[in-house]
Length: 341
Image 1 (tube, helix red, strand yellow):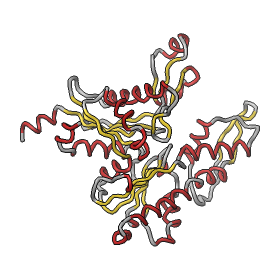
Image 2 (tube, one colour; image 1 turned 135 degrees about the vertical axis):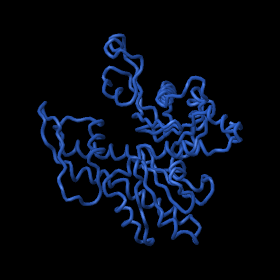
Image 3 (tube, one colour; image 1 turned 180 degrees about the horizontal axis):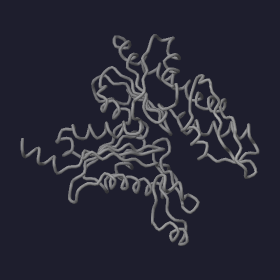
Image 4 (tube, helix red, strand yellow; image 1 turned 90 degrees about the vertical axis):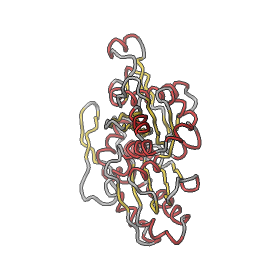
């Protein structure tokens, strides 16, 4: 037993949430870090001189984006195809996260990466390849399964992970979920951004704003239902900051993803063993950045009334809930599974 414990002392277990918008890492040494999923290289020697770095990540890359070849390499949770440097950007982003976890010199790193369900099917091999350069062993699991594991909701629960690229659904019934237990839809956070951008362009054609500004409006003020207050933001008009009322446009944009979510939720419950459907209805968990939309849990609960009373709640820490669960899974994973990898 002592030998086994010593063997594990030589390993840093990490969980990684590889997200379209944000990525995070949780390590068994207690470190938790995150970065927006952007990678940028200086455009030319002037950019390199001004910035003073060969590569930038996250918010720092966004801040200097005018001087960079900027990449957001993940789309709908998978590596964007058609642009060769996207694979390099994903690899660099993962390396950045691993470095933030501060493994000791010579220490082995075992990683479990949480990705959207579709990424499991489409490019699991590419993600493994991107991670393998920095770790000694790697597994890829679906993000909602990592959430369920971290919250110990392994039976009779439905996890809905509302990310930027996809909304992922996973039903748990006391075993590792298979493809039939999981589903992904594409109307997620990025879809809200596009809807809000188009609504604001239509309402305020003379105002100057970009998609990054719109995303910030959404992240700060997003809501569904009736909040009984006006949301105003400053947007330049002919170079002067002017207050704009975006309340109705923001509500319409945020609510645009809900019909598909409620429809898929009902579908996942209907697939579940009929004897246990009451239990799963009372154990619906929302995670991901979309779970921070004000009022979304109540909205979904009310929308589901036609199939019976449901309990819907949001996780407390959506930024780290996937990486936390993935790290816990990596620590609990029997040695023989790592040895097989």
